[in-house]
Image (spheres, each protein chain N blue to C red):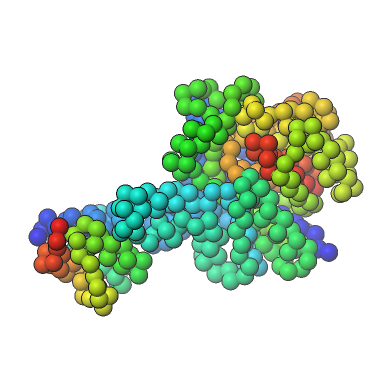
Length: 85
Length: 353
């Protein structure tokens, strides 16, 4: 699980071009949106593509996204439970 | 009919054209066939949250426009008009590559958003909160002149009092490789690359962004009056002089009235006679300048020439590095710019002090 969290942090930094942020700057429970990392709706689309492309998870209900993408912790838990690759 | 004045300029180029006065730090690079922009500190102009999704051309356009606005002391413009040949080509390449790599699945939004040609104009408008007319011209090597003509007409017809107009292009790796294959860019490892003495095909390429604040009134900080702009798609080498004479005549001028001629020599030996005929004949007694040895060739490189011309009229000085001949004049009042790319897309721009 720890490896998955580190992997997710790296993917998010790279995919979303978070130039001034390092893996160590993102705590597992930091909110990804709003006051935490400050991601926005376009980033949410990028995260959905990461789930689909890298872990084989298709988000059918967009409402699910709010809880899944709350933090690295919640994202990693969801991926761990639902990944197909 | 209102007149059009250039009241602010900003330029990001393959030379240090920010934080400098006028090309005093310019250097000719004979070793590269593709020149890269000297980047400013983007974060001084764009917030970290906004900058992370911006392609190179967008960032350069935003900074050049910010420099022009600051230079003009204008806080808001009525319109933003942009010219670009290839738009945000880097992100276009990224998006297309992603389509191929992922078998048309998993397409991410960021590079798609930035792949459109009007991204630069849109981002400038968002940052400046300009809700007025916003248009982007994509007309090859006359993209910038198309934008200029639109801006000039809008000011003349009093549709707008102030307009931000600019030209921006960026290099993309894949497109650059294609341009090398089709001979538009000089071959690799065939240097030293010299724009004036080249005997080979293809140009030395570059990239950059130059923006101008145009207004309908002359101010203390005015650089020049934009007298006229003309575009001709196709001309034979022996038709250029007539075209220039006719252009000048329509402005009640003759060749002898031109104090400076700025030409778009780009090192492509196949098309340099368009310029050489003028240099050796009708404009032999006129101060002649060139600039693509500094800026590189790209569809909107002529915006760099307009930036140079504006600086010359304001400072009344011509840096040695852009002189084509030793002719000089006690003062510089009228400047003619002539550019073409591969024998097509000819443009004539006339400025006066």
